[in-house]
Image (tube, rainbow, N blue to C red; front, side, top):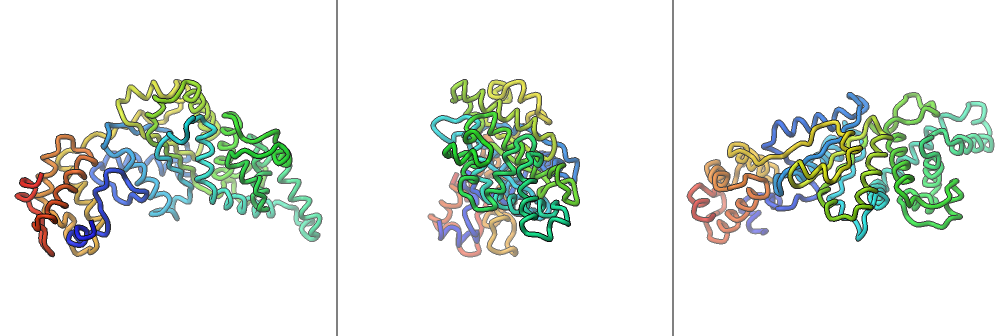
Length: 386
């Protein structure tokens, strides 16, 4: 592919059928894009602040994963300074041979490993600020008052052990991190944090995750931090390919539904939960129980195939985003007419179908010597190579 990229003046192959981890371009879906951007922005504490929960669905190849990856990149990198929020994207619920909400919790918390360490540092600073001034003069009294605040159970009342576990993380105690990640630890290690055992059931996992999201986004009413809010403006959780729930056993489906419901209940503000699902909207009602469905803030959002005009716009934007030189036309190494021919040829104008055709034409054009340095792939080439 290296010769192809050189001739096409592309930094990397833009026509991958499975979206990579970094999706920086999403075009052609103007109205849908605006709707999703409004959703992810509105839940921030500096905006409306209310939580959002929606399902993004469509046939295979329409670009659900592409959209979620794009939003993930936007929040975590492109506009990270503006969002100031963690974002967890899980590509599938197929996470283990047997999946329940505890397994889902484990994967979410593992993705947040660095964020948890940073939250522990932040909380310790806030607690320092809440120690009475008269106690700060003596180191022994200072540490005693800090410990009292951590142990009070009032910082995260929904899951009192969370503050204690975060203190353990701050003190580099491995067991504290292991417990928060949902790992199996010995009972004596749990008792140090006033826990009978590890986080190994749906109830504890949902309580812990909900309390963590609340602490990060809303702070704690028990602490005077100079402001009511936490260190983050929002918390984003994107779960893709949830249609795989069809293959799960009933107890596993019930567990995941119960955990999701409990987290949504715990976080009426600053949480954005988006699910991606392949298939008809009617399938959603077989996957999610009525208690979860009632908590949706939007009707299921469908990604439909593109029109020919949208398809050309989409391909031009994708090519532009992979250019080695900004001086080249957006559609290079194709002509606009060539992209129109590709769009017209595609029976289903989905991202994957368009990418498949573009890749085939580009690679054949290079192999047959049709694309030369500075040349273009035109409509006639497309007609002969497709």
